[in-house]
Image 1 (spheres, rainbow, N blue to C red):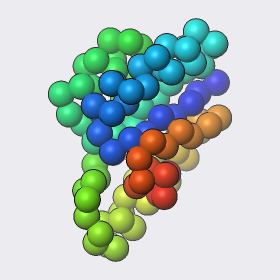
Image 2 (image 1 turned 90 degrees about the horizontal axis):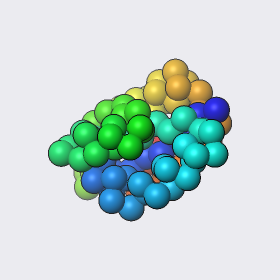
Image 3 (image 1 turned 120 degrees about the vertical axis):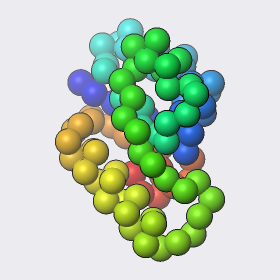
Image 4 (image 1 turned 135 degrees about the horizontal axis):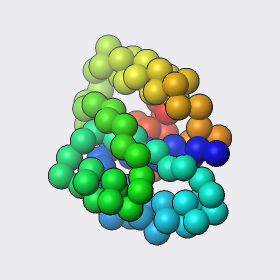
Length: 96
């Protein structure tokens, strides 16, 4: 089974959710991290987490950009088919 974890930066997932990722993997789940790519992607991959880049403007309020973000999440989640989605910041929670 697969679980998707998303935040507005890969840094957030790597620094605050690494323990959760390890626990989920130990329980038999495949974990997929969804976030804009940054310097911490390699850290996520090193703990066995698959990374899927999701470009987003973290602070923007442009409705067109937000609609595009919704479509990106829709496509990714439809393709990945996770059993659960864990969003940890505002935009992943709204659009994921």
